[in-house]
Length: 393
Image (cartoon, rainbow, N blue to C red):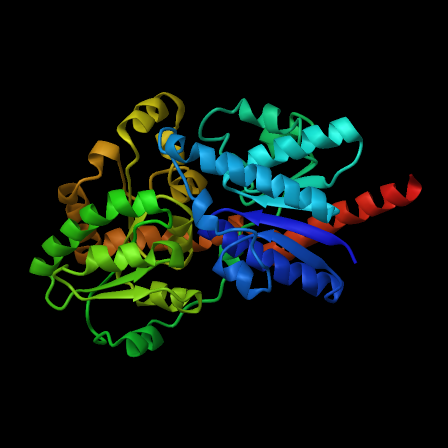
């Protein structure tokens, strides 16, 4: 029974990893073993994580520096665990600061010893947004790449890296039930509901939650009966509870993933940190405003390297700015409040975003197949090829 080692370093990767584990078992009739690093959702699929993924949840060029010593220790621990377990394949998911360093070490060991697992990565670096030269670099040490978006494979195939567009699992997620959510969390049926998504990393929550709180206080003064719905993850839940305790509108904090789709359906409008959740909100048809801030030095460096029109995935896919985005110095309570009020007050503004939902859904699936199943099939193909090679040797 082959062992597949899966590493996810943050909430979005944990969701992909959980879907991959389910799909691998479905495709093999359960004749597969998994080990690795994951969060709550992968744990629910039976994975015993090597250490908490919250230790890897870092974003920003400067922000990573204070955590570098711990990250390096965890990288060493992970590589040692992989060497001891001897999996057929290692699948790393997103979290480039961590996973790419693990892959580089594993590739170097394989080059030196002549043996080691095949290396697959899911959710590649955003070379289409900044530093396209990274595609050539990672092609040197990966064996296969899985992508969420249809425009990504050519960047990597140009450098000889086999790449499979599998689609995005959010595109096949079931619709939520807003009425059920409101009943479960005690929200009045006709209340205006603001969904808040301040990110899953501690640094994101620390920077964005106070700004979001100012926005909520301003909106509460204008929209009578305003309610706030705030889905979050266990790693930052305590910080979210503390940070929202004195807001002027009631806040329903949602920590169970099974309620997330219903929470989306209950939202009138959403305010979200840039990330995967913005795409999920678009697919769910929730009118959204996107906000983001990083350390000032990280921002100064990023301005020279990052295409701002590629920051919000919905906008990148549609080829135009469908979702308003407020980054860095534009991420202020004043500007965010005005943008959200427009979505609350103007049906046409909401309809503009709603029209993009089905178009994006079509872009993010292949022949209607579940992306997790497509990813599992690609992983198993590499696993079988590795097994055949070992037999031949």
